[in-house]
Image (cartoon, one colour):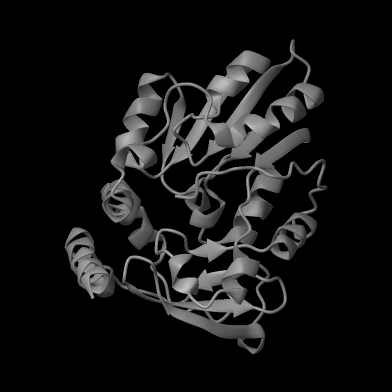
Length: 274
């Protein structure tokens, strides 16, 4: 009883931080991972870990679980730019330091890619880098391994953009679905960001077009779909700041559909899931 009362109180406080119920939402009649129609979509759940009413769908073709209906680009842009995203996570976890943005040193979640990047790129080669999700938190690793000519961050969070600009990065304020460019990049990285995408298929196709013919796309993926499907309490895995939950087969589909070849997979990555 005490725990139920405590959690109910917490949910009420979280709603005061962000009134998700009042935000405009859009029904999706196709999977954002493979574009399958309603005949391949199945209801999965209707609550998230913060206590918000957030229905989810599961695609039986590519394995993607996604919030449906959900906020659109404008709604999620406001969600990140206002800073409430970080406030909700900190309040829910009761451990603010755990979820603070990593700005100094090399974040643990990108360390498994160190050998891969050293193996693929020559030290003397000047590289252009696109960091999807921003915060420049892979820059510290790249600076040790590679010679960087240009570093561009795509980040919707206003509080983090200021830090990126102070570090001298080129910054695009917004989500990656809004980012447009004509130049090619040698390295595109996306760490701790995959679950925040609204349109995975669109993003992977965009990355394919932005990537140099000899370039590499490095990203981390925490596959929780199998656990979510088997779990009797899947709401503990759902959160409104994660619109999508790709399965392993989702990644294979996205790579093949965007005509990118999987160069190497690094397993047992311990990634911060926030």
